[in-house]
Image 1 (tube, rainbow, N blue to C red):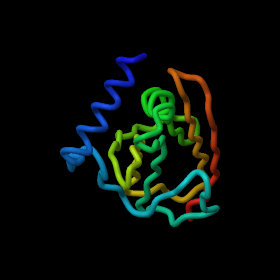
Image 2 (cartoon, rainbow, N blue to C red):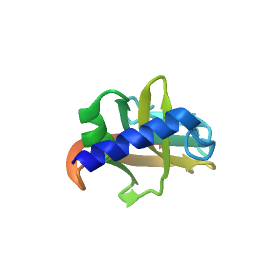
Image 3 (cartoon, one colour):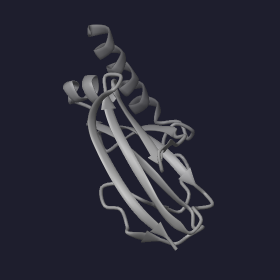
Image 4 (tube, rainbow, N blue to C red):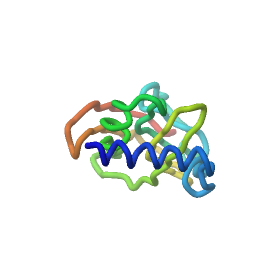
Amino acid sequence: MRRTIFALAMCAAAVIAMGAPATAYGKPAAGDRISLFSPPTSFAANSPFYIEHGFACELGDRDCLVEQFAKGDFDLYLDGTLQASTPDVGVTDGILRKLHLTNYPSGLPAGTYTFVGIWTIDRGTLLLTMTATITFD
């Protein structure tokens, strides 16, 4: 446990001291963001968009860093199929973020789709599930 805390503290300190590399945070995103917390009911078909969710902790919040940042994960499903995502990690304004970015650079064809986001901690313990059904037209 102490090693985990020490390793997280060292990683956070390194990111702060050196700045986040361009390839590790703020990855390019396609089009507009769709949030599972406040999704639109409709979206333009074939228009680029992205979904990005995960975990965020204040740098001084040791419990959050150990429990959520180190052990947290996010998976996105589209109509029951797990979507590939890119880790997007960095520090801004004293907040360490570990997000998962899924880009849809060509959007989706016309139709109704269901997105399910699943946040887990500690290798699979369910924390939160959000579902959004969106009509692309």
